Length: 380
Image (cartoon, rainbow, N blue to C red):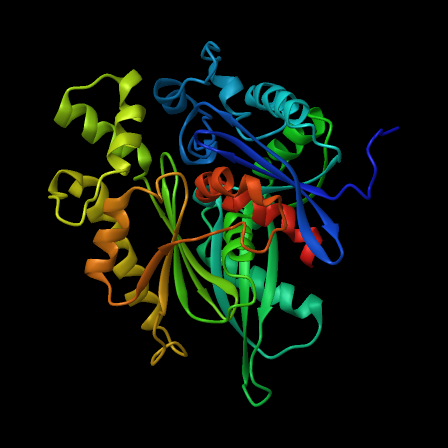
């Protein structure tokens, strides 16, 4: 029996490379209201490569499970991203502690799957009405491009609205390894949560930062280890790409250029964020900024070169993630792209006490995914 009430809203949980973020929302007078939030900072080794992409010996040489755990035998490495993954208990304990400290009052949760392990594409099909026919077409297309058996994948799709006279339909398809789904399900079950939904970060970010806006835009999510790029069109995340460049690259640059220690780098980064960078030389941050600029341009070229997208123009670039507030990033993007560039506010649609505004504004870029996850069952 649960001591939680189903009227206590939903909690969105984002497990990222540098910690776990959660937000609990309730629906009050038809609007989402902030009930509580929490952050557990610390390295989370969530981006270990898929075990099917490497041999156990390769994994054994390259990766150690975080938290001081010893490297396992080769046969145990076969269980990465599954119910038997040794990280399930570890992450469940962190999540359980965070739920308690944040005083979460619901056991209904939504979580996100990391973009780096998700297959995402748009499939063009002849117009059909039966769901079973759509699934047949989608599975046939996926078998051509997936690196593993489709029986090992969990596939979901969403039909993109089209005109009645169109002869073809376009379907947004997302596929995730079943072992990854089992891995997340195990974490939440052991943390005492009922996992109502698992979805990609793309949809969570679209929900918290875009909402009902139908404009074509780019969302750049700068995490600790990776930066994700989403093109949102007609309110749907049409593309997503990911590169292994994140806020840690800024830390590496500062440590190398200034000769500072790991313990001091976060304080220095916070201090330089307060500087006026409009007249400062940002060349030292090129190893962080250049790959992001290149990926944005490549994503735009790819998307707007596709049939049906020619003639469309992006209206803005929205930045989110822990390093979104790093001033050189916004300034460089404004210089490179002729459109509005700004840090997104995921709290914009949330009701909360106004005295919390300074604190929440500071945390906002880190909480976009968890807010979007909590909103899923509130606004839909």
